[in-house]
Length: 113
Image (tube, rainbow, N blue to C red; front, side):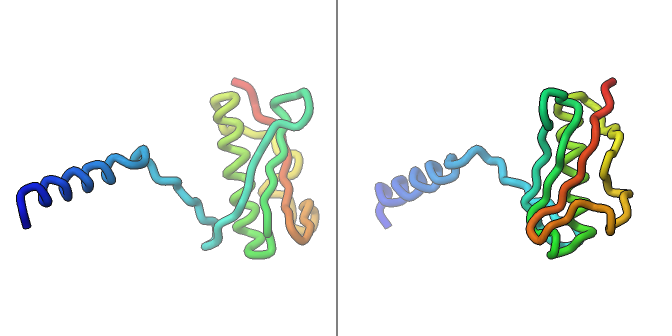
């Protein structure tokens, strides 16, 4: 290889190494499954939230854990605490949870510091 070709390859490798921001999206698994989940404030009271998880049929225990995880993240982000007063939460008996064929929903209130 000629020196010019080697320099060109080094420059191309350096340019490719600079692509992206160096952060990888972390994928959380719960009971061995991944879930699409979110938590958001419901209505005017920002402390009250609803956490929803798609496809709970993959693993009901995993779906409950995923919803709880999103709820905790939500409360930490808004109020700096993971303390939650659950209305329907991870300790609610499974037969009393709001579960449809495509969604599981937990709800509660973030405790303010």
